Image (cartoon, rainbow, N blue to C red; front, side):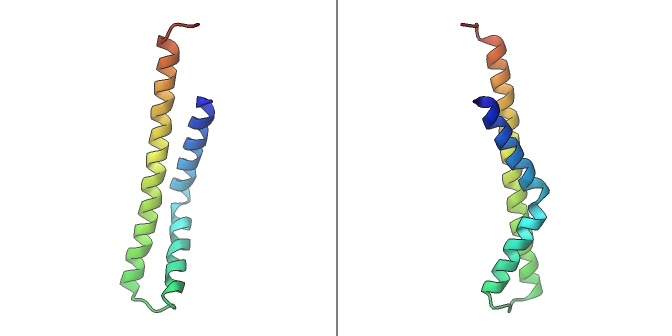
Length: 83
């Protein structure tokens, strides 16, 4: 069970990191459409960078948690007596 959790969390984290530009651009374009296409270029770039950074941060946190959980599970398996 813990291997599945580690694998899924790690894969989701990697996908969010590697595709953060695509996801962020998609959300920024959606935001621009909701503004009826009228927004300043500077504001659009701020929104775009914010979306990209949020996906990078979320992906990094998920990937870090999967590594941490894998390390804890490994050491717990190695140190705890077998039943």
